[in-house]
Image 1 (cartoon, one colour):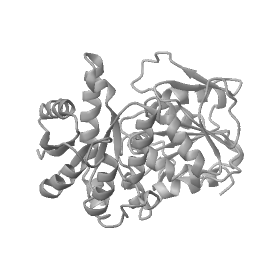
Image 2: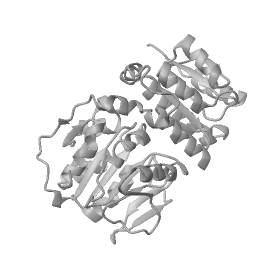
Image 3: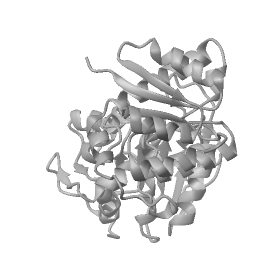
Length: 369
């Protein structure tokens, strides 16, 4: 079995040693070297050509953001940002994702003990296997060589955006689209690669959207507020991090709070909960969808996008059985084809769409396309 070759980049000796110890214990992962700053990383990437880089954000000599600009211009490859769990760290991480980093992981639990550090290790290894082992993603990035300008963030494309224009929309179940009057709500479930993918969907939805949009993006606290602010600044729709008790109204986009669960109540308001639902994710797509079924029944347009795992598939089956309609992102434009794959394999994806086709499909289903 071919190993996933990883370069670790961090100015902290402790963090470099911690990550190396965690990864070196895995038979399918090889740490090819460590780097102490962005400049050191660029030199070692040219020499070692790793499959994936874990990149700290704040470092002396050259920051992770500055290094990422150069990497994405000269030698594009999957980069996993290792971020501080702060509001500032969230902003910097979203900057990195906009520049082309594939995903991120937060540092806090790496310094803990027991379940915290074990959870960090499991998440880190899972992301490295799904991202670093994704030959399609690496090939897609290699085709971008020289296409990103290093000095202008607006021109940088994410790995999904870089490929999406070449992807083709396909139909799965063969069902005809339902009348726009059928839908009362849109629910989007998304994870790995999500922030960049959402930038390619939410700003392209029209201002006259006749229903609310509820989004679960797997993210920790602080990050979802920053994501909502960025999407709001780029969108004709109002995009917010959902707050407890606020009304769910048409034409507004609600992003679930990181580290909490978002539900919808019978009086069409948001409920933010810290209850233990015995699920893996906070927030969780299935938890939201379960409440959505109680309120809206089958009058739901479900959208499942890039991400690891199967979150959303169980409750989307129920929504589909009640007459709801399901859109799934295609494998070619996903960073990780996990969540959409689960829905496709269940046979409930009414349409399988490229990333660029998702916003137009949502608008068309709602009669505003």
